[in-house]
Image (cartoon, rainbow, N blue to C red; front, side, top):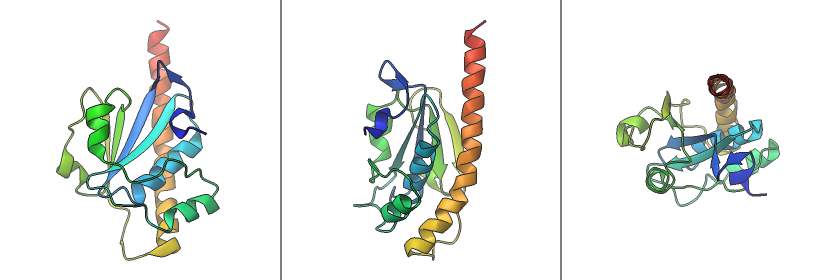
Length: 163
């Protein structure tokens, strides 16, 4: 399965492309990407990236996400700059995960985008599967709310287009 085309795209571009950005793209942003993908919203595609991408994903994240029944194909640390420079038409919404992420890169994506800033999930001292599960449970309600916001955006866009 090509995870980048799991939902309907028009002219090779999703209606709404959501990019989750964190410091290293090794854990939280990958979890957020997997959770949003799992919602399978038509026309919405999830991506993740890091300011300084790690060499590899947190070793516990892929197994924990698999145990949770979430798709892990395509989850690996990526650089945010590649989305800003090479895929600007694909991204319409950027979600900063962490207290300093927005300050580090600013709102430097081309075009008119929606930006969200989600503060740090909590104490990072939990490692292993316990830390991953804590982050999954902390991110799920945020993803659910984001999905509601995205559905509303889509409905508003459809309503405007029909007049």
